[in-house]
Image 1 (spheres, helix red, strand yellow):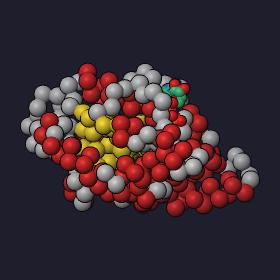
Image 2 (cartoon, rainbow, N blue to C red; image 1 turned 120 degrees about the vertical axis):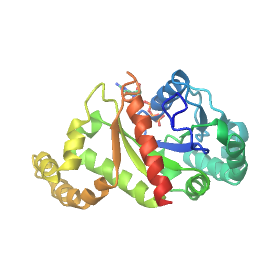
Image 3 (cartoon, rainbow, N blue to C red; image 1 turned 180 degrees about the vertical axis):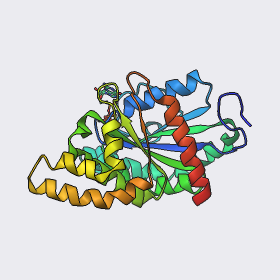
Image 4 (cartoon, protein in one colour; image 1 turned 135 degrees about the horizontal axis):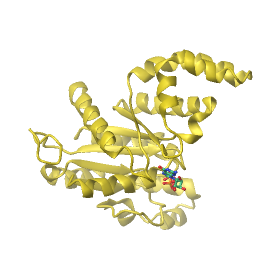
Length: 264
Ligand code: GTP
């Protein structure tokens, strides 16, 4: 059954999409594009901003950490630098996260998705206790997926690609949630090379072998390890700037949410 916007109408809970990515991968631009897409397609979405330090957002957030925690005051009060300030702000917000979950639960039957934007410094979310608490609070209440945004043009270099994949791998094992490799900026470079490298590690090794350095040898060994990791992943190519791949993105989210329902 379909509710007219292409989404199945039997699901009562919204799917939580946690958007993470290296600084500069285009996370914020992509969030904006996704929000526009949901508006255009009549998909009912909520948007949450978890970056306390962001000055301006190109989209309107329904739930915004900045409404609750004043990052600059936290820095002053606890005598912290910028990263400590962001981390402490996130910790303070995490203590109230049950209230955030309640707000979403109350509106659950009117929402298809909740898009969650995370701090620009990826490790503040992925390697902090509060990031784990927030992720766990979502995942124990709603189907939850992680969209890992990759800067595709920058990943054309095999060694950069490898470090990016290792980081994604660590997030998969830490969150244990379905992970969508979201290859962004395909208007600049198509992500076909990445699909080929993930499909066949020998193709990747051939690309990496053009560089005879130590890291290249390491990269080749690691590609064998990552082979198993790729089997557990879904990937999609998008462009936050041109808007290409939005339908494919939401289809992949649906498939990942189903995987969540079967597994968790
Ligand atoms: P932080 O705020 O540091 O976390 O960066 P971010 O990951 O949120 O990246 P942001 O959205 O600020 O984008 C970084 C740069 O990439 C900007 O110059 C964007 O215009 C550009 N960009 C983002 N998405 C795309 C895309 O799909 N195509 C192209 N060509 N450029 C993009």
